[in-house]
Figure 1 (cartoon, rainbow, N blue to C red):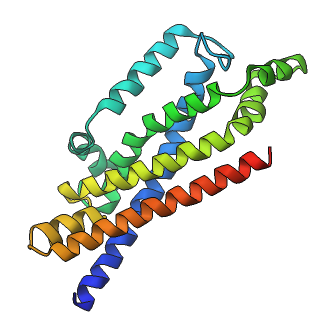
Figure 2 (figure 1 turned 135 degrees about the vertical axis):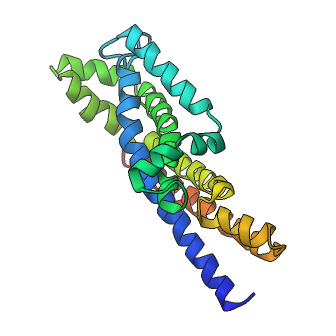
Length: 221
């Protein structure tokens, strides 16, 4: 293993972290409002503050379709959008676009599930005290569901690490691209092995941090 290869591994790790960081931010920006809408428009849950069955069904169908799309195919389908947004269809920056869109419906479902788990009594107490719908959402539902939301965010980040590795198959950059181009295709199994080990370490680290933050929040409640 030459210094050049170690430098390449380091650069690929930074690329993966960059992809995961920005796609996490954008997926939360897209998925959080969608998840809140799915919860408050639901006609059967305690979080259904403003039940709208038709809107809820439409949103659910959209989320289900996007969630069922294979990620590799989604990257290819979104090549024009990536080119429009960042000026290219390959590379680290371009991969952030499909990563964000792929993770957003996943985030939406996690948010919906977390909000629906909030105790109905807490919502009713807020109503009795005269809270508006927006106050119930932002001052009751979201704070009460925060430990669960943190766990969901942890799972999202881990999925994005896996997605970013798959993006390497189509020139997405990062550790996946390193493992395929410099490991598999050039018959360097050690490079591929190290890339996989780094991915596993990242997953374990994110899971550990997420579990600790969620557990600390539960203790403070």
